[in-house]
Length: 356
Image 1 (tube, rainbow, N blue to C red):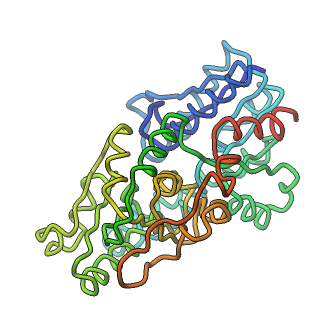
Image 2: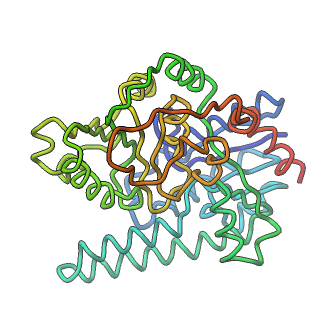
């Protein structure tokens, strides 16, 4: 089959959505399909925060005028009436819980803008409402809605019961090359029983940054020997961290890092932190667990799907006081790699999506 996997952000190895699109297309090609990932970027300078999704949709419509596909796999907000009839099978594939993200973002903006900028807040809410309407319309036009993880599938079934027959579930995993590198880190890891904590993510509200900051202050006071690294967080995180802990070297930030730097980052820490309030998946969960680190996690993203395979290493957040107990779960013995590899994900995609 000829499959187009649409990704809104620019295609590259750094962003989560683009990684997923590229990995899915590559895995489908390995199974004999003519699959390609595509992005509407770069968008024109006229694209703004409030109409960006409209420009993304317009660029896709222009692209489809000169191409034909058997399957369109794309974000729901881009499924216009015209796009919905442009291929035999249109799949609305989620990479993040858009409505939950929107709610959290608007609540954070309310705190930031009121009472100083009520008109700006009203404009952002109006834009958010327009986006939400287009998103729900896209779900209704799609033949299949592919949810990321069991949690999102259940949420969709409860909120949109009429769409339940169209719902399918997929999961995330590192690329085959990354999984080889993570296995090497796991093999070389020596139990340290220390308190070197690693948090990976963008510095945005749905990642639970408020919760994380409270934990850092409390943990630093209770456990003077612990240290914390915030990675992939951009320059914003440093300004929000307790300055005395930054000055003492107990909190350090790595604003950005390349994929090749990830193994060294993981090997230099004893435990992972995952604090999201809402999450698409959280690929850092897979990466930290596969590298032989226990992870203290909130109930969000891929935690529900990963816990059966890491019943002792996937631990509640926040961690208890004292040294971190080392990793004990064996992902090979638990059957983790029978599900969380891209060949397996593509095989399931072929069975549950393409055969429709």
